[in-house]
Length: 163
Ligand code: RP5
Image 1 (cartoon, rainbow, N blue to C red):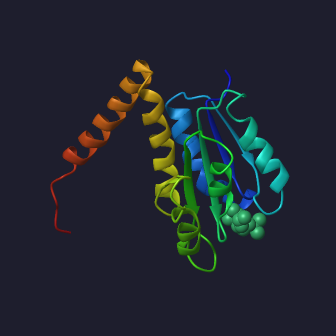
Image 2 (cartoon, protein in one colour):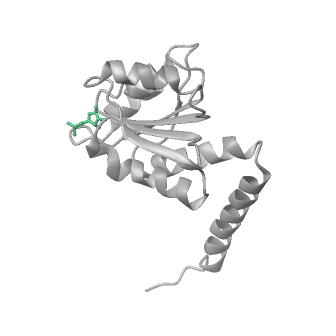
């Protein structure tokens, strides 16, 4: 199946975080690709990837990066596909640097930015799925089932027990 979602990350070291995104896409049977594309180390490849994304059939790009996290914004500058940015938790500043690098885009070039780290990576996968579900009824059903399970899990264990 041709990938609908491109999951890209600035470094191999981002993989433990972006794996959470890929886990969601796998669970919901959404075809995707994953690769390292670095804004600083492979800038020409980054632009080529963004420029060719639509013609290659991608619908959404999820870009994760940490520190001076320019990847999501620079990719968004080169495509009109929706770009979801995931701030990776950095070693020195805990991801606040990543968040601020990704979220403050100038008006006109949007990046939908998630929370820092694994929760954000999970939600990036779910957000992509929700966008695709607008025109895919079977995916919408899988998403509704997933939500219902989350609700049931909380309801089933909602009683607080003192130790
Ligand atoms: C960013 O620099 C990457 O997204 C990564 O989060 C961070 C550190 O990269 P490495 O030095 O671990 O390759 O470009």
